Length: 282
Length: 272
Image (cartoon, rainbow over all chains, first blue to last red; front, side):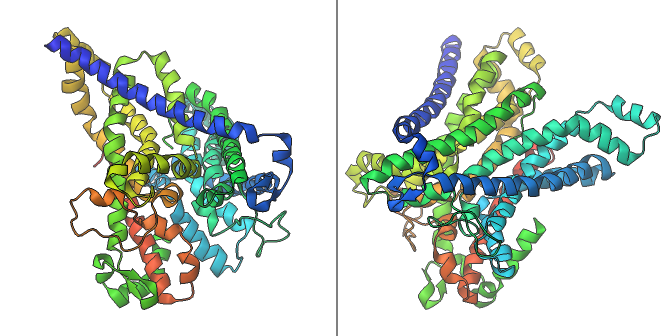
């Protein structure tokens, strides 16, 4: 009886795992098999025509790139500041703990909340209308916790003897931070940014009210009323009413491109994460 | 975060002064008549999240047990990479899969119950369940691995089978961590927007007469997030009361998700 239970337990959990892996495989296969035929060079270099039924996704890629670049530039300095605050400048253990808990909680906030916040603050109060800058800043808020947590973990991993050695050599605190802590842990910033960007690239809810429209935008020329096209919003709009036969193939193609973009960023971050046994729970 | 809460609380002020608590318990939402009751939306969010957790919970915990207790460490990494990738799939892509594939599947599979369309609370729940899997698997796996290996060896040395070690030693000690995993997953489920938006049907005022019947699962519904993600946001701006009602939904959503994420995080770090 006990033996039977033992075997049953192993079989049951094994089945669970296989089911989960099967779901992953099935999803990736479903997207790959449907999206692959649409991928030609012209798909990447042409702009959309006939409401997505023809042409390509050139400006969508450019727009997503602009948003991600803005988000990266906006989040990196703040992440460095917060991470240093949490690891160096906050002396009390309580305050540090609350900063950490706050970051993890912020990481669990729904992205639509950031989107609405951006809508109120940037679009309405600042009067920017739909603007690439608003979208970039909102995405920066979404990815900030991830980046900060990664960097903090890496700063914590800097051996204490490095800091002691630097202090013994007479370096000031600012010098220690700059040339020991940050120099040793900048990889954490890179990995965190990759993970954050991978998440931000696929986000739709934060940018649909703040930054992106479906068609008719190219390069932004200013800040006010200068939206961009983006890949996620393209998919989101077409998924709501894709009845034209030409749309389907293009739609799956766009999804595959987005998936490729996201996966390549998280895979690029993977080796370093495994190496450092970091499990940033994002 | 305080700024977030502050902005939403302030922006939603009109609806609280006008409707008071009736805003949460009200069952009708007709913005043209200035009637704002958020209960059907809260119900929708809860049902969808419940379905997702019921589906993803056992499956995810089972998979995590297999990873943490049975697999050697090399195989662990090999298995965790695809699960991480699952976590990385953007929600709009899930939404696309749901809208183009899952919707038809639900419509055909449950044809006996004559659903009006494939856009149902159940569809949204299944889709969300898949999205929650990586969260539950990863966090449960972490919780199980935090149980000291020496205790497992001691259990085996006393003659327990591996299943008994899992049931009597690992799981009880990982209980808090697993609880935290469910809470964090719940937070994600409540807050997920675009994937749910695409398959839930977005029908207002769908509050069933019998709260405990499963039948409404096969009807369309509306969640807090699908309401907030819709175009009503653009209509509402400019009318203080209507806008206040929308932001009130944001405030509700924010409080629910902050609550579950905060408690989940504290539980995980072992303070709650």
